[in-house]
Length: 246
View 1 (cartoon, rainbow, N blue to C red):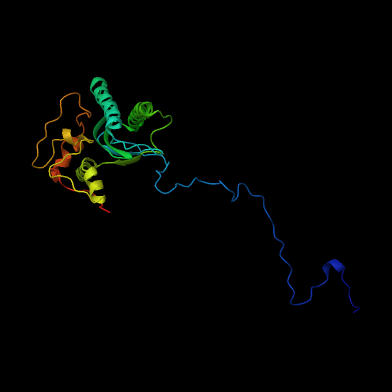
View 2 (cartoon, rainbow, N blue to C red; view 1 turned 60 degrees about the vertical axis):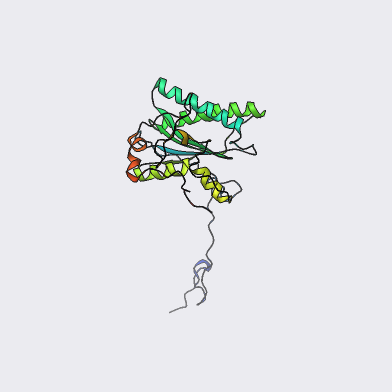
């Protein structure tokens, strides 16, 4: 039989050689570029993730940190401006119903702790926005400044059990004792922080306070957890130092 020849396009390849795989590049969108993707939360900042719904039976611990360099919030004139705003909020809660109320607070040098009751998430957000706006307006006028008073978003912790509320009351009302301990200072026995709602608090162990005359800076607690439930874990010793001490 005569030798058969093949067209050049169908000739056999030499044994042992493999065809080279061509890389197929598909179009992409975005890519790794500066500023792309979800924004990172810097250390110490509060996440901007959506907050969960809030039930009216749960008190909330709120913490605000001041923006930039300011004098101590415990300075008498600044403290007075903050407490004037708290009095207005307390009076509004009594006059218009209790959809938002501040039950406890502690004013520190660079931050502010609040324990709040609100009917729902919307009432909490609106109430905090109004309170923060009042305080910023008063303090900026006092110091001759402009712009927001507090940095980023506020810290929030929803309190759902008597134990959580008890621990939070200790932490907030005795917060200055904790900071004094960290500074190596000692508070006198039975001392109550005048920059807090401790002078209105009726849950001290072995100590009965006489609230100051005049308009109160806080509204009475309305939830079972904050009014009664926390007492299952005992009254609060006024000389305790709460939380981590370092």
